Image (cartoon, rainbow, N blue to C red; front, side, top):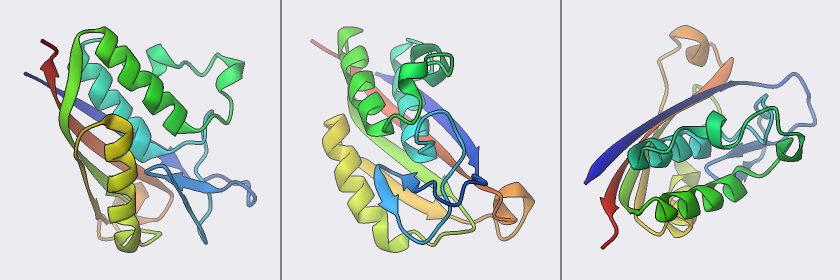
Length: 157
């Protein structure tokens, strides 16, 4: 058994047309996050947890911002590729846990949907929680969104 941890943070974009993608879902009524891909901080944290648990790097090393083909890419595509990389390294995810830190938007009504989507993508249960920072720091000032994930991996037999 191995444990991987991932953390990702993105600021809100200044582009009013940029959609917010979080946990693989489109979140209506909120500005999008700035980033090279779709900037889905939740999926990025989960990817980092899976990659670190398998000992094969991180999001930036696997899917660098220098690759123009990844500009605007759906992070769920990167997650699917990550699951393949993890399997090729001799591991599979047994379970994962993800916490999204955001002062806004409110996410409670979408967490079950996110969990089902991510669990299907990873092939293992993914639990998701959300929290605010009670108005402290950049997240509390609603300047962006952060996510923290852990994944429990097991060696394939």
